[in-house]
Amino acid sequence: MNEWPTRRLVDLCDPDRGITYGIVKVGDFVAGGVPVIRGGDIRENTIVFSDEKRVSLEVSNQFKRTIIRGGEILINLISEPGHCAIAPESLRGANVSRDVAVISLGKEVDHNYICYFLKSKVAIDWLNARMQGSVTQKINLGTLKELPVPLPDFSAQAKISSFLGFFDEKIELNRQMNETLEVMARAIFREWFVNFGPTRRKIDGASDPVEIMGGLVADAERAEQLADLFPTNFGENGLPEGWESKGLDQIADFLNGLALQKYPATNDTHNIPVVKIAELRNGITPKSGRASRAIPEKYIVKDGDFLFSWSGSLLAKFWTEGEGALNQHLFKVTSNHYPKWFYSLWVQHYMPEFQQIAASKATTMGHIQRNHLTAATAACPPPNAVQIMGVIFDPIVSRTIHNEIENRTLATTRDLLLPKLMSDEIRLEEAAEALEAAQ
Image: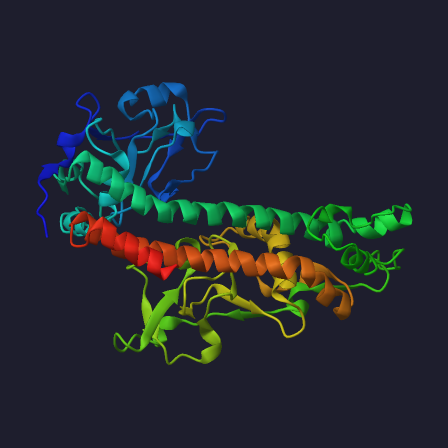
């Protein structure tokens, strides 16, 4: 194994900008102001920020060195190291908060290579050993500047970052595909089950009552079969004739999680990660708790289960992080009578209302109650109609779950290869051959 020379991170930076953190006191947010990137906005090599978090131009200009030009590395200084991303040109003019450092690199290094190194186990372990703070652990700026970076020649840097970039590109493509599929599914769901568009168009004499399907069903016979599922008039209950109104708790079972401190992990081979609200939002991390796998089977979460956090930050999604233990404040949603697509889309339909209910609570942690599930009614076609409608929705749900699981595999493979490539423990050619053989 070759020993690459190392240089301090600060020595690889643009001397005019270097490494610095952002706005110390953000103050009140200003509509239409300068976007502010915070530490929690940086995840999985991407930067996703809230458009509401903006400051005045005057406040931003007090921290000109961290005004983004595009191409800088942004790294979260709070909590666990390793969360960083390269600022895209689209963020030019934005700024960052104090819990984010802007690393402005020089031209003699490959920026992607350095960003990948900051996510490597070598860098994370080095920074973890030097974290400071009694309450909130953080990376000291002076420490970050001293981080030793293994530096092959520029050509090798570019090849390594390009190889690792393959994984991130595929992950991003899957993410974009899922975003598109979810928008499509919700649009069709709203048209069919909320607006009752096909029935209304039948009443108006339209020749294509399920026009929103677009190109989803190329088979004319199948399209006609779907159109036949929608009645030609409304019943006295205001729904398409033959449809019923049921509360969410009638179409699905909402299993609340356990107080898992009563099921402590016993050993490394017979425990599973605890799925709390943080894991539902960010996935399993080294900081996730562990519980004994001896909990009742129904409280074990598996890939494809639909989870719903009913307190704090309300969120609902399909779980794709492997086995876990369902913690309290989370529902595992299942049904013996309706398919996943049906009850999951109804829960998502009511999420804005549930979030508003939780936000209006005067307690420290807003939440919804089971009576809110009863009051949230779903328009339910006859069972045979729901089954046939699955020709549209089932493939979308299956594909989104598949893409998320594939992303987990891609990220794991990338993270396993990353430290080996960075330390020259494995050659790029060997990694490429192994990847090709696995595909």
